Length: 225
Image (tube, rainbow, N blue to C red; front, side):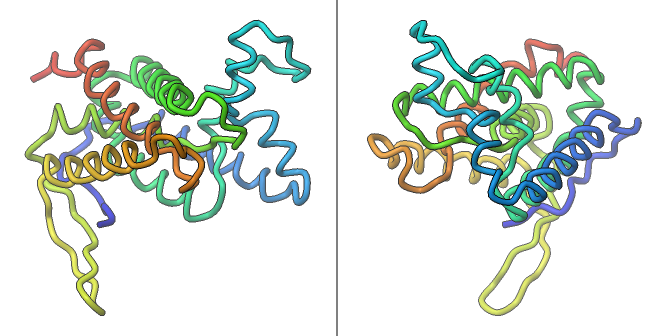
């Protein structure tokens, strides 16, 4: 299922959402210009659990930026066109209303914190992995977690493939996002002991979603009901 847009109106321009999308696109364009230097770029700015574990244990790092900083920088990196396209679609679909509810500054803070906590969740379940982890998925999962709390009955216009045809249906957010979360949770449990097998940071997705559902109300998500 692919979301097209929700039915909840946004009354102010979601400047932070648009800015985040623009930054991600610019960084991705830079990635594509690096050629063979992309691996080194990821080594520097992606979350690499093994290196983060060493840093937290007090081992000096030869990197020019602190390993903890990669919990932020990795949120703006992507591994391919489908990766960034899917993430930005979900951010555009669900982010505008949450920005409206939290306000621009708190939304940006919320987004980045969810991304950090999602990255730490991924690290916790695979501390010795040497595979670079990139993507805005954890932060966006946090936005989705907040959305299901605030707008469970909102209808999500969704592309739905049926055999050889594609149609559109309107699915309540509680079902669309609930189904997505269950998928991530099941895949997270299935990846225990082999976090690198699929190449997808399922624990970051599940963790970001849960943290977003908790952190959103703490920051005042429900105050304007």
